[in-house]
Image (cartoon, rainbow over all chains, first blue to last red):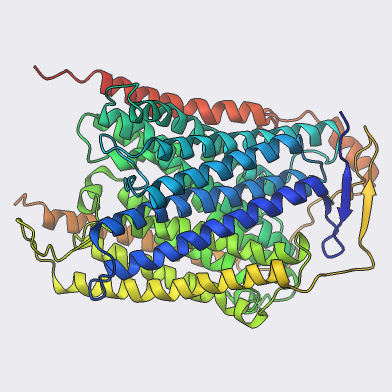
Length: 574
Length: 58
């Protein structure tokens, strides 16, 4: 079988890009952005309904829109983009060709068909408003489950294409030593994806048979337990992928090298071993499962994964600080940060993503993963507040900032509306941070998630929330609209740049055709890490990052204990 | 070491045995096995066994 070994050299970065892989990266990224557009429009409708003053949609339309929003954002947008990231890390960063592009196209086709079929079930048939979680015995139309299964099979094939690419790169010696740290992060995401998809298959295939009448009963607790192996782990793919993107952007923008490759790789190993176990925190209020299982999975094991996140949260800004100080921004604690390129959306988006993920998503995640504290906020709007901080501020914003690098290098188009692009990460990141915070605030006051009408108008059993909860929900809606404007700006910039942006033509552009058994010529990076020289203060090469980390730990401890105090007031134990 | 030429340094580095942890981290399929086996045993199998062990109401 003929092997396509056509590469082009990117004049901007020097990367050698395998052309079949490039086409696949483009189509997956473009499809991801289309899913983001659909999910974004639906997000607007959800916000305008939960904003009680507007209360736009009737109840049945609200639940349909909320289901479609969850699936398009949490599954289709994210995983299409992650497949593009996997192909980028497997081929471009390793100077390798993509293994079996034909299978990669089959994977794409299955994912696309799956996404379309699922959206058809939810939005066109309108009889599958079962939320992202689709808990049995609440049943959806069979096409809902079939769409998800097709999508998952496609994503699984894409994961194995990535793993095959690693084998090809090693066999053809396109790199020396170990794969780059960014590729290792992508491998971590890929491994978590394989477990995630397997868990999804274990439960969604029988549920599909149940929906067509071949199976009479599915136990609801069994469903919830196995389903969360899919539902929560799918968000852990995001964490690994966006951490890899952080490392990539630190290297791209600053030429930053990881402070310690060993430590960073060790942290990714902790993700591989323990991150998926956090799925159990969705079941902390469920009877039937023992506290041993709950505590081991959410606490003992999850804290090792939390440790890994804190390592990444320390080493990424630390690496940036060291790189900046080596360039001469060495005064005081924070000159390196003040003089960072805040007008460059690749950096600003990534840094807001890092801070938002750590302070909002990370701390609230640990609080929620504590069995006793979980009772305060279980099934309240605090939960979507938490995961909008992790998945939207963390993952989506990191992916958005990577896009601003990819458009000129992979799509070879000039970025349109550069002034708007400068502001977009602030609009989206800060809007979404406020949105998450206010949801968490309302959730702490007991406002339920997935609820059409918090006023309980006409309900037999009434409940009156405090005025602060209503204020929180209004502020949530306003900041959510700011984030929607930021998301719309991203879509405008990316779609216009990719389709009608000015083409970049460079005299240095050339194709390379490598013969069989002769890999593309590679310029290997210098493996000798130079000393950091005379930078930093008081023996620390990155003192500013150290201070930020201490601030993070203090916030973490304070928030944790405030919630224990709060728990003591809501439990009538006195 | 400090005075060695880059060529010599690379030769010496290539002669050093690869530490076991690095061998593990360089083996994507061993990592794949660990990354699937750990949550399968600790989360799914353990969880399913607990659910199966719940007495059925009479």
